[in-house]
Image (cartoon, rainbow, N blue to C red; front, side, top):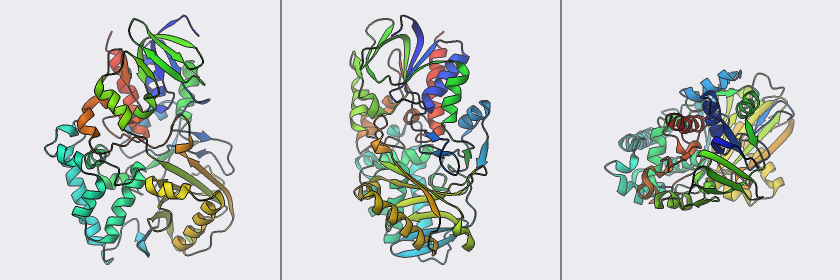
Length: 451
């Protein structure tokens, strides 16, 4: 397509690839961004024209310590608003409806003590593994042979608490506890600053939103820098046998560049034919680390009917649908919003139902959770990320047993002129927007440091 030789070609125009593009452009490098979709943003995807206000169909949260993301968005002129839920949360677990004022399960609830101590134990395992090189931790081999479900069975006795642990894995990683390596889960918790931070409904990883939606970050970078961003450009091959690197799309277009950043998940990078073949550890990683399975449901009502009983809108349901629900109304919205995440094995069961049964089941769940009939629903949207052809899942890659100790640092190690980004490659906050920004900027800095 172009006879120009770019300093850097970035494959993937999600928030990670676009963060890398901005860093490189600011460093006076010539950059081209190649994107298979017809839009930029990747796993961030905002519609500004939905009834009641903009809707994020993908990633949306800014955590309390997400400094790289916040700095990037604010530098582009965006504004944040609080996502902290006020009021009483609802747990639907093992046939019970448990109220948690300000997100805290009362000590009088019969499973409260083991709930607290078992999550503390989980944090202890995460601390022993760490986030820099978990494969070198003393118990790495044992933990990587074990799935999370086995750890739960060995360390938790109360059936309700077991259920809550399983729900946490499905909701955070989008995979069943029986699919995920315990070493990976411990690492994931460590690099996201603890299980409480991951599951927080007040602060932690779910602290703020971007007014107007997250995809504005990628769009504004593309617009403000005047970058070469080629959409509908699914890369099929990367040839690094010579200089420059030759990058081709499936429809015959060609790009030449001195360096390449792969800003996508490992499983999607496996669609690309690399010449020469990638090293064994990286090849194995791309074959053996799948994308998670997550669906996101957005519902809008004329009134926040749950607030009449001082309920926050947060629902943790492991009885019926397996949804983790948050209130999602921004000050600029003209409607009251609830947002539900359905991951892993819960998503698999949910997806087998008809569209009408899924919607009616969600409304029945709200009735039970809020003890009130939902009224005035005027907007309902489902985004199943497993159906997005260039994502194939979300929010993040997960590692089955045996993968982390076999592939070690291949997730982020550069290979000659090839550098890896995407949220998975981040040392901290993998699976979040923050991780995407950090890994994109790290890959850009590695290239900038070459000269």
